[in-house]
Length: 384
Image 1 (cartoon, rainbow, N blue to C red):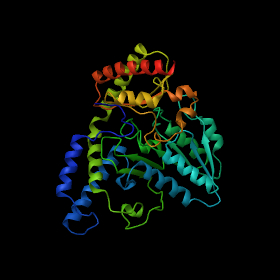
Image 2: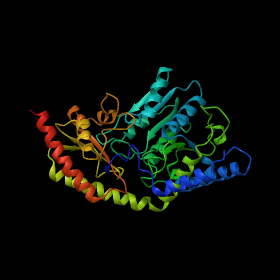
Image 3: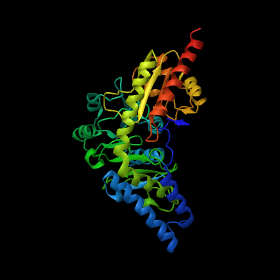
Image 4: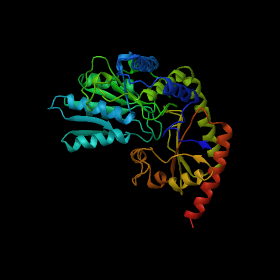
């Protein structure tokens, strides 16, 4: 099997599985319990929080555990908006955000809020001048993803934050960092963001656990109420073993992420060159020579259908995707590819390839060979 859908989710590392299995046997106490087992579980959560904080170069008190990126985005965005001056009803985001952000925005539009959706260029970068012009005294929040999950574009968050604070110091910046966490180099303190969401299963950890960074001094109210876990921001018994696994995954990332990112970057370049050499009439939608994540490659194979091509590859045990896993089951075409100005024929023939440290050049050689045969066969059928 060749797995090239690592933006949707990653295979859990063996070391993480071993750590979680050990904890499931030994550390099953409720972290809120006052006895020894509960205190031991609480200590394990503290250690994971510290590992993640160290990786992000922030204080451990600024890290909150959630069920994943979607919940982190919801807590941050909804809490910021709900805490704002009721007279201010303006929010800014981009046209290429993840559904877990765009659908929140649609909900607030129904409630009477004005939402500005920033345009992007052909590679997915926002227009800085449009951002400047859009910020006004009523702007509560700007929400911009760090790395786009379909085409890999990296936004210049540090510059964006400076523009926001210079124009309106009261406007807050939330960043969806699900595809940047563990994949590219950055420091949250340097970026200066107010909130930042991230997820475990994108970095070879377990599903069902994620995190939210909240800048020290920024007080947010919960949107879920209960037993006051996570300082009352996210109540509910903690996903203990998930959090422990997440911590272990980040502990490993701390020593390997630079080397792994360099490796997958070389692998992406190798695959792209092989595709260019063997398959005609393609369009590369990822800005390979620009500021993009090394883990993502989006290509359109004209006169094919992406979902058909996906299943051709699946028949040979090769796994890719056509868009975000959170929207790929819908009937709508990719909103990201629409926003960067692709024609329908290019959107229809697009697939997303997402790499892992586990992929090899032999995997790529085999994949490109199967891809070539599949594209040729689909084109023969479609162009009869």
